[in-house]
Length: 58
Image (tube, rainbow, N blue to C red):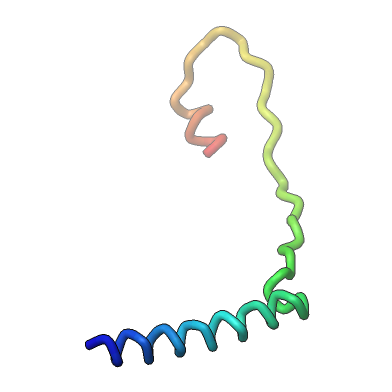
């Protein structure tokens, strides 16, 4: 069991080296560009509740 754990530790150390190299090269550091969204403007509140206005907005 100890030998199996040592083997797994060595595999994980190898993977860690690969990940560190990838981060150092900037492969994993790419950023997503934010996209502008078109959001409808709300009308001025007139003090009345209208289910159809809510449905139209959604």
